[in-house]
Length: 275
Image (cartoon, rainbow, N blue to C red; front, side, top):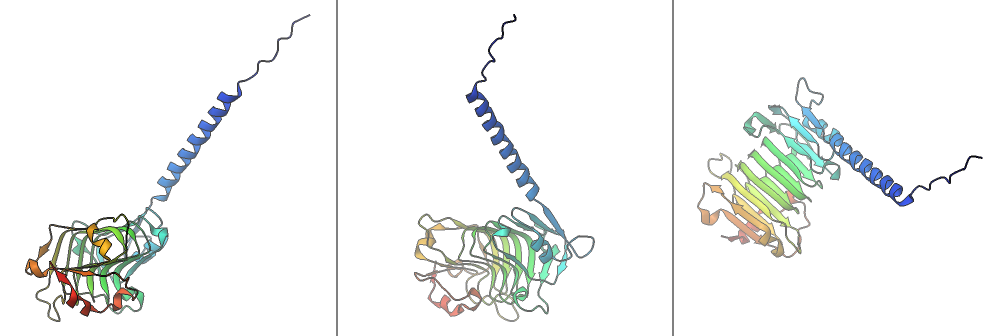
């Protein structure tokens, strides 16, 4: 009779380890593919693009996406709202912001307030835009953990040119702001932080002369911050057309400002410490 050999037992541990490794690899690959799939570009222009307005492209975008705005003049104020838009990039013409303009003419409500407003979205980048004649500010960020404003031009808006309120870890660089009722560049009410994240203002230009209505009424750059937030601020390579001893104002505040930034009294600048 033939001899039956016992069926060999398969080692369980190596098989289990291999299964776990394969599963982990599959999950990692899926995550990478999902991240790649999520990073999309949404072109906006008046003719020839799927999105005829910047706002419609922003509304369709998500985390990590790019809204690429072609040169032209757009009569709209853009709002980027919520964490759905974390790490969004709005890109106009960084090499020449004058080519991609946002102009306020006859707008009403929220779109009339700011050329671009970012609220509650982290690490959003605005680059390559010109904003003019908006009722509140040129480019505005609030309640954000990280932001990047660069290669922007703000002219003759209501209060401030580039304004960050209740936000941390941001930057304003390579930008110009002029002809305002208040400051060209404004960092407002930086939250208290146990380990402050640095806010950087670098290579900015502010001209408070020649406004036929009213020149900048305050400082080209003003900072309103909780005392603990001040060490996290860094200025490098500023360019002013006013004497340096009157160009930067620091308002030290221990109590958070609860009124909306649009209605904060500019008379508070009278108590600023000039450095």
